[in-house]
Image (cartoon, rainbow, N blue to C red; front, side, top):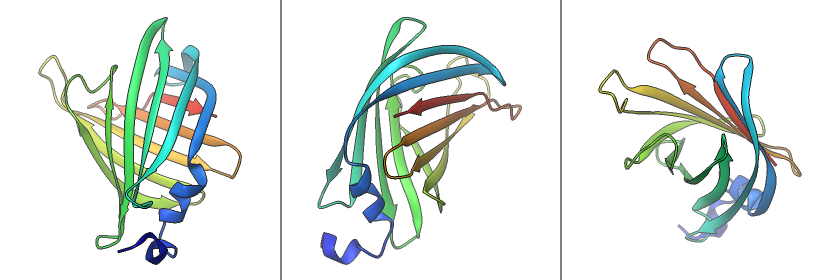
Length: 155
């Protein structure tokens, strides 16, 4: 399907976010208790005629360099957002796959990743909000017990 046929799908949202971004990454390890803030830089580029977008970013957590790659797309057959996420902080050597839905000014997706100590999997929910000049990506690292400390990147 050529990109011109994707105009009436959520793919137009990806094109609006394409470009270079600078902002602040905020980390909460416990609900309502800010643990760390750092500068973050990222680039969103369109892939395969706008079918997908690739977000590459770098920041730090408590002074240690952190890098990540977030690929997202919209599956027109299943009518859902689908993403893959790898980073140097949570996913070890695995790729986390997430699925979700459109929401006002963006989308939300959820996936899971294994606990490196052998415990139950942890869930990960990512919300992407874009209002034209501000991009906010909020990730919730959800414990097996259901607690949701968040990690936010605001550009």
